[in-house]
Image (cartoon, rainbow, N blue to C red; front, side):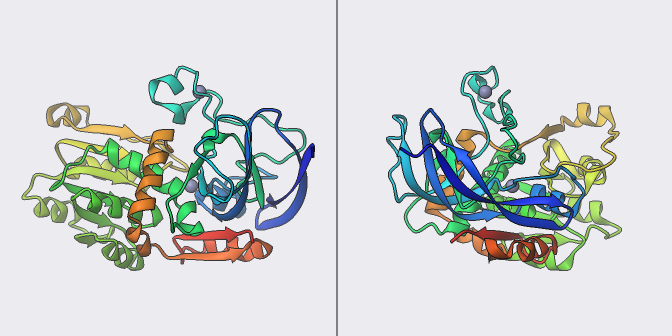
Length: 348
Ligand SMILES: [Zn+2]
Ligand SMILES: [Zn+2]
């Protein structure tokens, strides 16, 4: 039997520099699934490393991945067969640590993979082939396309965020930011029956969120923005606010426009200054909750797979583009241009 596998991977070696390298991956001794990667999304993480705002070189990125099962080794793989199109949840979850057994496997103590020899660090989805443990492999429904499968990961993250907002149908939700994550928030909140307000300074983004079903859109720079939002809710304020952009200003603003008993969900990670001051009595008297959300649990991922497998019409509001791995530089240029909601690298 073969002992190692030849894999091609896209490595970012310096700002604005990405190239294909070949690696000899040793086959795992325990059970594993071999997946031929079809599509891999270029998310903020990969874009920041490419642009140089997160300079961790060399970097083997890619965590939004779909592909086809080409070999299965081991026992815990009954739900899989070769030829299945699958989405990969590449986060490590040991299943045994304190967080894993308390429904917080997105905080597994082993989440960071240990460095392996001289291989570049990173989740490695930007590869033509992957060897992954069976728990990271999720079969997709019939007819799900590779680019749709690659979007399961960000959708799972947004599902978790929307859950933290505890919205009910008929609620008014405010989404700050009309980028890719703002669009997915808008779609999932509409699926839950909410009225959705989106704030973004960019008119193009506002047009896209309207296509995703937003009921109202406002410019972030509007002078009477808080008043305008309060007016929509007869002065009560939003039931839930989702901060996908806007840094600390968005958090401060949220406390002004969230209603009594409302939830403010911090979805974005903030670069630079992160200190926010809020009036504690404002939280106390109005029973406002501020909640964080990060990545996704295994359960969130499975729910995103189910959603994409059964109802994926909402993905049409996203402007996507597929680029062959051979033209990786072009793919990263497009991804960082903000013209597209997701650029997917194709390995075929
Ligand atoms: Zn991502
Ligand atoms: Zn764990």
